[in-house]
Length: 116
Image (cartoon, rainbow, N blue to C red; front, side):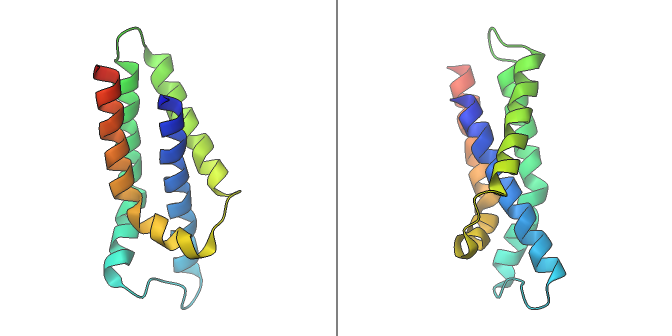
């Protein structure tokens, strides 16, 4: 279950990275709403700051170790690679703006799962 959460977190970060690259490279492809643009810009930066604490929680759980936290990070990188395969053009911009909130929620979920 924890590694599925890692893949979902990585998927949102990968989608955010693709949208940010597209918005910065193409003329007229940015967000019409400046608030969504700001949330998207913060999502890529803050997304990895949600994955790293979640990997720490996984690694410090009872019976786990450093390798489990490293595998959590590897699963999130796999999710970022999967995001390149599953493109949803209209929804990607919304996913990009929601990345920060989704990853914060999933990091909190990982904390409660590992502490139970």
